[in-house]
Length: 317
Image (cartoon, rainbow, N blue to C red; front, side):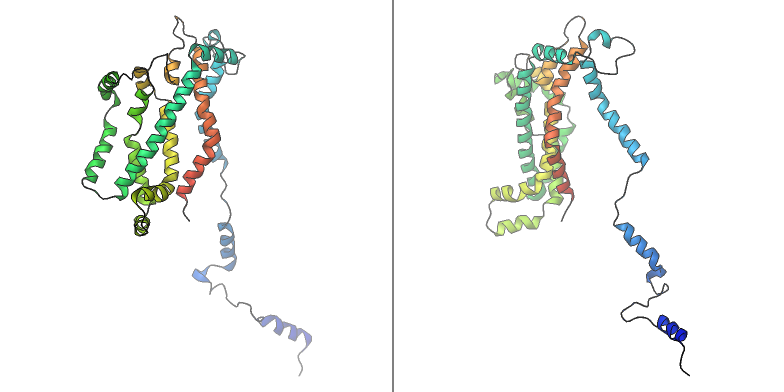
């Protein structure tokens, strides 16, 4: 008896096609249904999106971080009488340029900015150079009493800087460096934090096999440092340089002792503002804003390179 057309279609539907998989849900790994596995695999490649709570917290912290700068700009654009009123102003006034001009002239701000740029740049470059060399020595070289010397370097971070002021001032007085920029630069050309920071970075980031391979190829110590150590340490050097530059720019304690208003840095120059019977807070705020603007401009220009250097050190491969 010949099969009918309906029976032939039923048999064709029941017979699996050539090259197709006959795996059932029970035969799938760990009993996972194929639909769920496909859904999980598809969601793995998607980007995670922050929720409203995350954005709210970020906006709150951003507003709190920017408020001091915003208030400085608002106070610099007002007069001293308006700042003394209650409630204080919460928006900009029309005296910003006038107050900034007054602060520029009274505090010798032009010379102060040039001096601070030179001092902070020199300290940052010297700290990055010497800290990288010392960090490489403590991380990868073998010499006697290495651990003891490293402990001594770290121990200097626990000594208050006020204890060294008197002997340091006596030294610069003997050298006749009072009111000269080298009196501020030389004591800060390297610090223990930079050495420890670079040592901790190079311990894991710089493979010992890479140094040994360079020595096998006939490279001397200076060439190894220039062609092997510096390229590997570049992200950490960028971060250390940025931090050191900002700290040197904002340094106040030692420059106010070693320098005068005739040859000031920015922080020393700002102490010359508002020395009257009633200090003009608006002019003081204008001077503080002038001293902050170069840092903002520098970060706006080089912030992308600094963040890129940090990410280069964080991502491997």
